[in-house]
Image (cartoon, rainbow, N blue to C red; front, side, top):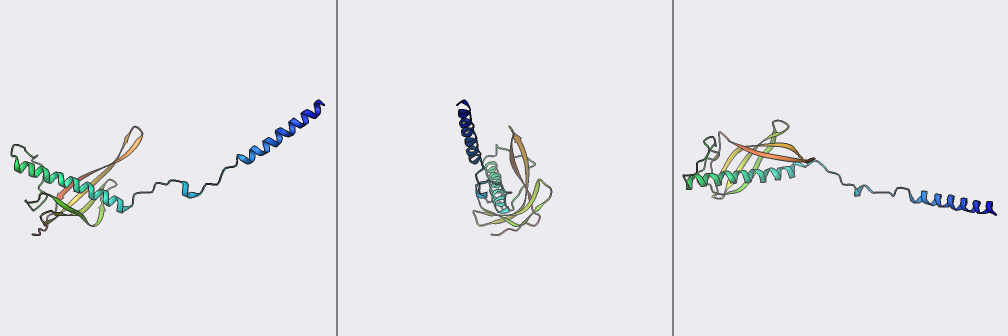
Amino acid sequence: MKQFVYLIVLLIITSCANNSFKNMEAPEISEDNFFTEDEASFATLEDAYVVLVSEKLQDYLDKQILVNQHPEFIAKEDTPVLFTTKKAKEIRQVKFIGQPEILSDSITKIITQVHFGNTQTDTIISYITTSETLIDGVRFKTSKATFERMKSSKKTD
């Protein structure tokens, strides 16, 4: 009788083991469920650069207006004059002309056309410098914009 009970217990264990193997098969996962991070396309990168350049140029104009209205504020002497127009107070639109020229792995040169609120237009050269910063194990991409006046800026009234 003891042998009969051992035989039944052995059959139950082996049958349970066979069912657990069937349940442990990996479920099929479609490729749509995976998140893949693609490189930023130029369109989204260009939009980010437009925002960066617009903000930096508006800061430049605000600083120039502040210096003109309040002489006690002194601008740095190494601050170049970027625009041919002196009456510009607000940037209406920033538009990049042509394709960006990649000078190095971190510096991009872009010819930039700036439209002011008083219907004047000026053209400058924008340099976008990008770098990666590691903070607490997380990589952040930082960008910095600097500007240079073009020698043949056109002035539209």
